[in-house]
Image (cartoon, rainbow, N blue to C red; front, side, top):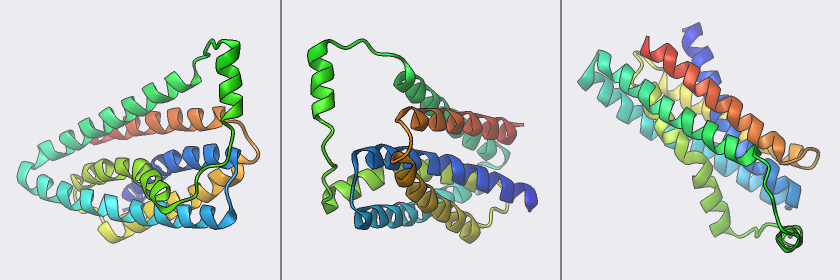
Length: 195
């Protein structure tokens, strides 16, 4: 049970890294406190619902495929972890910009639109990985579903709030390195599940 709890906490932190990075970027541009609270609570809720759906699909798959379900779950984590590493690597590479391009980027530093549609789209964008990770966790034997989704949702919501605070203090580069670390953790979890 302790090993499963550690795995669930690591996955929760990795999933929260996406929302942390996004909130940090949004925090750099600046949003109202009410938007921060709405966004964090929606991220927490979606990080409960998405893994719940994925866990149930994974449990069904685990019952159907037996030992191969764990390997399938590991393959999903390898894909997600590799994708996270690739995106983070591309975000940290230096870019050469013309003066006019730099001027446009600096001019676009306005506040984020705080409407509901924007809020929902951003929440879905950082929560969709929770569906596939939930599927992978569901392929493990005897996964405590309720505790898993509550931990993932709570950690994601808390990391979102921390991201907003961090966005006011740190640069965008921090978010890319957090995503790289998250990708590595997923790859290590995949190796653990496969063997």
